[in-house]
Image 1 (tube, rainbow, N blue to C red):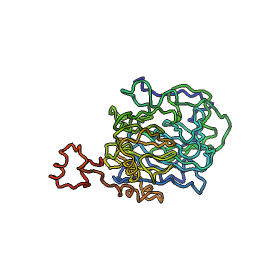
Image 2: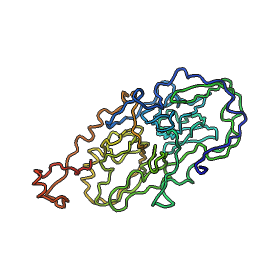
Image 3: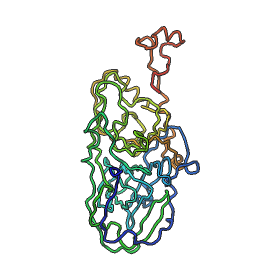
Image 4: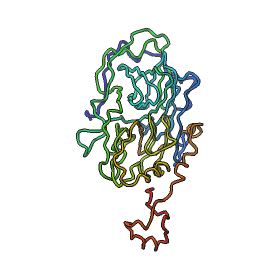
Length: 416
């Protein structure tokens, strides 16, 4: 359909086809994949958490600092996604990167990225995101030195603004706040310039004698763009109960099934919590979606300890998760009506998908994996009491007939 067409016209000094044949990159990259199956990755329902990675000791650019964490599907089948992280300390010099597999959504957590694309230049700081559509060549410089962050990749679909439904015409991310680059070109001669292309999760290289950033002008709607997350207009409940995390969706990559995403990008920005008679932190739950979370800065409302900026967690389909013990006990101690409370100095995010992820073996063996993550819930205790009244299934008589004593746990007393 014409309304879904994405294309751009680029006016080049020299055509991109003017290059030598591609060859497998030597050395190869052992920690990138775009095909998720039993031979490449593992299935695990266990809750996983990783601490922030250290800065690389050896010179490492964005390409070599990129590694896959998890994903589902296949770039060959044009269906699915991959989630990566990166840690780099070196600019890309004399080379550019092209992802033939899918669209990149890059979330820098530490250090700015100066990105040169075929459509122009973008400076992306922590607290901003950048989308590099499939097939665009780009190069990344690191003006602040060591840098790290998160990357999601979608196969066979593109990121777009979510429908607003009953919200109406305004709210969440506004189209006006997304920025595209101004055309910029480099007409210099570069013998031995290298194009690094990711194709089927493997890296290939080709040589040419000019910069790919030789576009004098362009027009169209298929273009790299960035967004400042501080411009997001969040929505939340204003009286009781919880809204689902989808109410904080910045961008969605839809599947063929209406209302179901290959991947949603959701944020948890500074905002007010005002719900009354409600356990305000994210409730304990299991659901059909799989959730990869990262933290750009500050803290996260559901984890008092252990979830750090630059770290990550993965809670897969139907695996229970929720606030840690400290958060739970502190919330209970504040009572049922603690008054309005502002969550400030925070920017957490989530990559959420209905496809169940398989996890790469190297991240399961990383030294920064938190093998004690499960212990953050071990201390949870019941606050249920039959003597408090208002028990929907019959009060104290029902408790006594079931053989429960005051303080015993009961189904539903803590959600999942």
